[in-house]
Image (cartoon, rainbow, N blue to C red; front, side, top):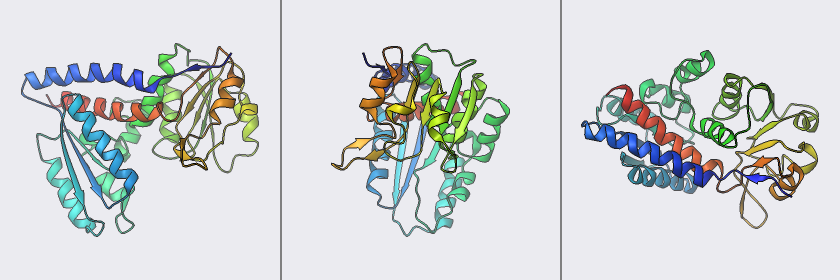
Length: 285
């Protein structure tokens, strides 16, 4: 028998219903949560992500503003627009879709967003709050991964978790969230020798490196929980993750859990972004 599936679509719908109820309560008090999404350039994948976020806002009762700018937009003009959105009381969350064109410094852009409206959770302040265990806006993808793990009923406390990837957006905050949940955490990356040995000891595996088949069937132990954050394409152009899904699902056995790609972490990322926007609106209500 194969591992049980963590259905990100179903879980995201459940959480979105809760988010919509909170948004409606705020709207009834005259404060409809608002999200501003900025896209600079013509990256096709980014355009899809932005459309999905805007549509999700409408479906959950949030107000959204989508602004698209030409690739040649000067950095100074973008920063000026962010300052205006920071001052707009109708906007509670701001995100600039990454990547931005090369002439724009992404760190400068992130730090130009009011930390109270940083619904991506990428700012230095947000990172510091997470590291210190203080309440704040959490990066949407790692937070969504934690919700997925929680949905299985598998305890995190005392378990050994292995995070593959050390990015500021997923790997590092994922490790911190698992630590806060009292897991023992190992972070692996491109310079880690004997990756297989580390993963074989893991009760929980989060793969976030952006490389297909990073996690294979011989690397996982039976009964483990595997969360696949990767977004890749196979030889046929079909979307896939970092995990050799079919083989790993078989290797995990019936007591194990695994998230698919697509239909796993993707829907949860957008859902937690909405949750952050509502949280930001509640904070200033």
